[in-house]
Length: 117
Image (tube, rainbow, N blue to C red; front, side, top):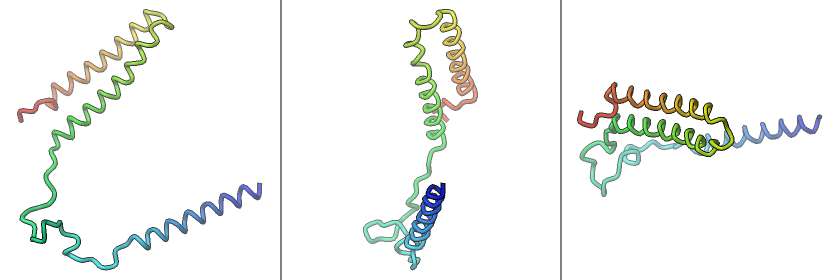
């Protein structure tokens, strides 16, 4: 028991030392305006180096990820059709598809899928 406690304390101590060294060594000592500005072939930048990010694109990407994960949850239904009751399989699949279609309809109704704006 003493060995386990000493190993845990040694691990915590070693992790603390590594984190403290990393935070001390990673800090920039000299803050230089030229080094923190974007580089454009030696000239001063004409505009902002950061382009505005389209929030609509981000929303479409999140919606795609959500529906992609739901499709991966739907795929195992095809593989268990032979080992389960057909009625319970059909009810479970129908409820899941209804939830997916309701979510798609809700996103369409809210206007999240319109690219014309």
